[in-house]
Amino acid sequence: MNIVLLGAPGAGKGTQAEKLIEAYDIAHISTGDILRASVKAGTPLGLEAKSYMDAGELVPDSVVIGLVKERLQEEDAEGGSILDGFPRTAAQAEALSSELEAMGRGIDFAIAVNVDPEVIVGRLCNRRLCKVCGYIGNVDDAVCPLCGGEMFQRDDDNPEVVRNRLDVYEKSTAPLIDYYRGAGILVEVNGELSPNEVFANIQSIIN
Ligand code: ADP
Ligand code: ZN
Image (cartoon, rainbow, N blue to C red; front, side):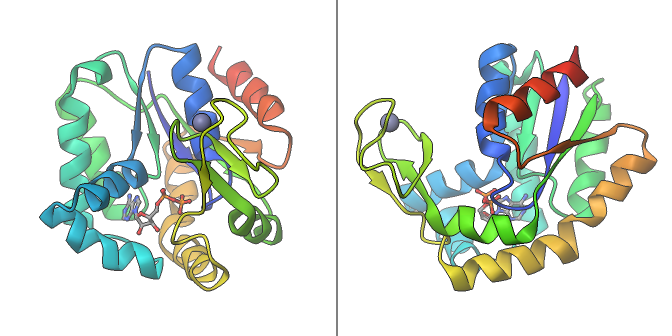
């Protein structure tokens, strides 16, 4: 089973992806996570990506498409994958479809997680992550509720960059909702409900 998660930054894709990989035996493919790991490791790719990410711009298609193609070959993706933060452009969507097709696979669902832009800005500026386990929380979490780890704020979760990320989303990524609707695999969920309610709705779609 291959699922594409669509939605603005901060819509809750990462949170739902975590729940999905726990419930089903599929790989979590988050281009944001892969890119942040490259930045942290200081690889040439990371150095190139960092300037785009810090500005809230998209990393070039050629780079991101290459990363996802490699990631899809890994063993844990054999049973399927959750694509989180990819595709973000029409070119990425085309590349994903043809790559999966070449592998004899396809996309089962494109799930759009819908959240009002006003809600998004607040969520992203208040978002805090666990340094140790990656738990996605908010400014009220003094320490990680799961492991007690230190919480931190992502470099791009500041008001100015958030605004640009939302503009980029509207311009480059939102049109993919129509693309997948046209392909007959789009389902929409209300992302303003609690994480568990959103997940229950996603599960009822999948099952
Ligand atoms: P969010 O969905 O909260 O914006 P991500 O972790 O998915 O966060 O992405 C963070 C940044 O990484 C993006 O703003 C962009 O610079 C880069 N990035 C992630 N995925 C892609 C992609 N598919 N194409 C281009 N750039 C990407
Ligand atoms: Zn933690």
